[in-house]
Length: 321
Image (cartoon, rainbow, N blue to C red):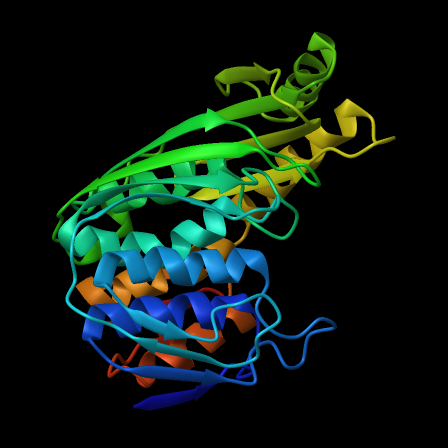
């Protein structure tokens, strides 16, 4: 059984998500210890448990320790199989982060999963970033994936629902020059006056002229806002909060994207981390502004499963396999 220290490197939930996905894909029995040991609140949170359960669905895994607060997890994968199911995080935990664990495994066999929780959550990509930045990269390399946002969910209430459908796919080696450079702005609001989403969009558009705008208003329980702006494999996101003017939310997302566009590399620093597992599985090459602590952790983790990622240069950093 492969034993991994869950506090390695950056030491967050990313270690859990990536490790169980790799265990499923390689058929490797896994034991994680000291999970998130260096964090203010150690152990698994609800979102991490949901990610583990989603991967377990795709490989018939047996588990021990998959509970909120657990600092140790045993994950014994079975055979990969098509996933069909619905899982609730039970909180406003991040649906996009759960997908980071499930999607690489689902590409092998296909499946459909409906996740309930948060679609736009602090310290996480928005569901729109997943759909507009990550997905086009994967689709350009052969991934057959569709994301449907059924409901939006914001902290603290959650209530978002997202259905992701995947057909068995073989990824081609990553070559970011093949990715279409679509661009746009999506401004979302829920449970708030109509003008909020419009003001967010107008503020972002003032900094990103000629970007197509999409406004999404929903009336599900709970309130919240978000803006996601993108240009090809680079994006910027911002979330609203009580007392923060809508214009500041729109400008923050635009500023993050503009900063990413000015930095060297084909992808933004966040996408660089998210693509590493696909780079390991399919091979290829891409460049990013720098080697982040998240990316360094993932590269180190991949070596435990026999995948070596070569990293050269500093600005940009070149990732290849």
